[in-house]
Image 1 (tube, rainbow, N blue to C red):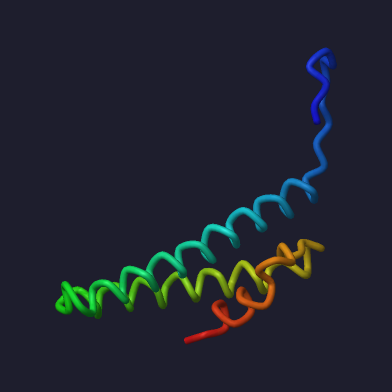
Image 2 (cartoon, rainbow, N blue to C red):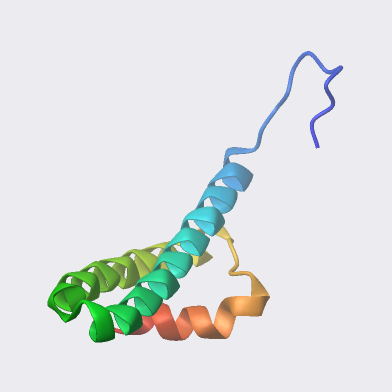
Length: 93
């Protein structure tokens, strides 16, 4: 927490990078789940858009994998409640 009375705030760039990686990874993880749900509905109601949704989901899986691979080198960790699912989704192709 930042003290509002402090005139100078020093931020650790490594901590900032870990936080950014965690947020980006979480966003990709969420996007994968959203596309999965959209694909399920589209298969029944809008089958013509399924290929496009599947392609976008594959892109998100790749992004998620890239963020996950970048995390260990920066000592960033995946939130434990979704670590297992994240490993499966981010490594799916």
